[in-house]
Length: 209
Image: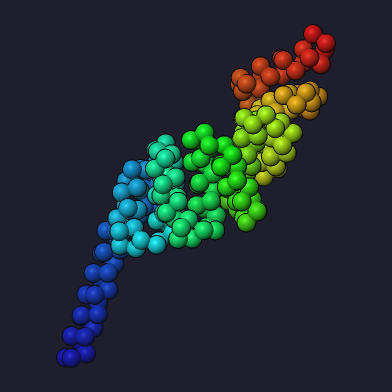
């Protein structure tokens, strides 16, 4: 009888645990479903219970980026980096938040740090794209060419990135290679308006017009 009672209690505890697990809200699932505010709310609750949980900080900051709350993203990112200074997720998020805040030099430092510590990371193509955009804003067109070319090495089928590479090369007066990049953008997306306009400009320059 005692053994039966023990088994009953054990099964009840396991069942209760499974029910709790099913009821527990999953911040990452909310994020993947596009329910960003719900993900934020869950992460903040998690951080009340576990203030140093880096996974919660990562999903929280990803969600805040999607909500375009860039300063709030940066505030939480700094808290996370105080806990784990070299977490590549937080370093990339910091760069992205600063990019949208217009703090370009600071953003560039974080992106460069990401490529140094996580050169094959899941966000490396996006990081090089952001670096390319930053170099355009800073007037460093050859550096932009290198960064955007690297982004496209990792993700070669992004038409808008080819268009931006064409623009960087156009600004560097490298017209032949600019035309090549614009053509690749239009091959991927014939409706890419910036690439179409850029191609027309460069063809006139190459034709002496």
